[in-house]
Image 1: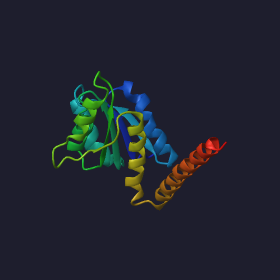
Image 2: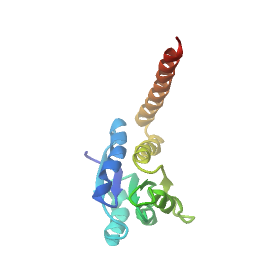
Image 3: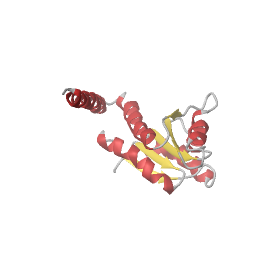
Length: 168
């Protein structure tokens, strides 16, 4: 997409299947994004450079997904003033709990918004990025309102189906 305002970054290309969920959510709101790979541990200089230059490239929100030690979101947050959303990824025998704790336990002064582990978290990261951007963009706010209405309609439909299946 041209002129991305959200950057989706992950520690390994093996995380792409999960992080695509963030991209899908952003596409639903018509938000331009980019996707890349960088590692807090294997390429620390690249990661710091990426974070420092993101705002200058027009990025307004960063979504960072990582598994295991999951330091990517925190390292990026240490090098930028942009909002960073961390997506913990299940990559070890600990089923993502290690990633969740590593992402959420940031020291005071270096915030990282942290979402759920895996695909639901990546989806929510995309939605949260839209909400952040929507503060200053009425068109995005309207799309978010429509999204919430669609969710509510889905619950109503499921309720009707359940009730009709119970009636004998």
